[in-house]
Image 1 (tube, rainbow, N blue to C red):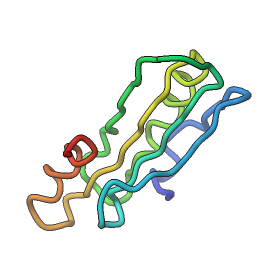
Image 2: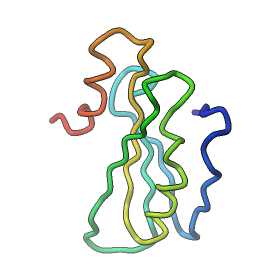
Image 3: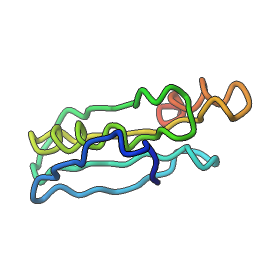
Length: 102
């Protein structure tokens, strides 16, 4: 994925952090990315939902620098994307809750 028109800062990824894309639905934007630190054990997880204004040019990568910082501090991060306003309703509202739907 790309986008954000160069508005997002370049993330500084800590050594040992792994980034793994993970789909949570069938549409192109129903994807997230795990940022997993090298720390071990039971760790609290941070879930990021970007503030991309529901516009197609802005995606989850707006939060890459924040995800990298949190992972560098030892927090696993699940950074998710969601449907832009150009997709039919209710896609925009339903996508952020999909990762948590059993």
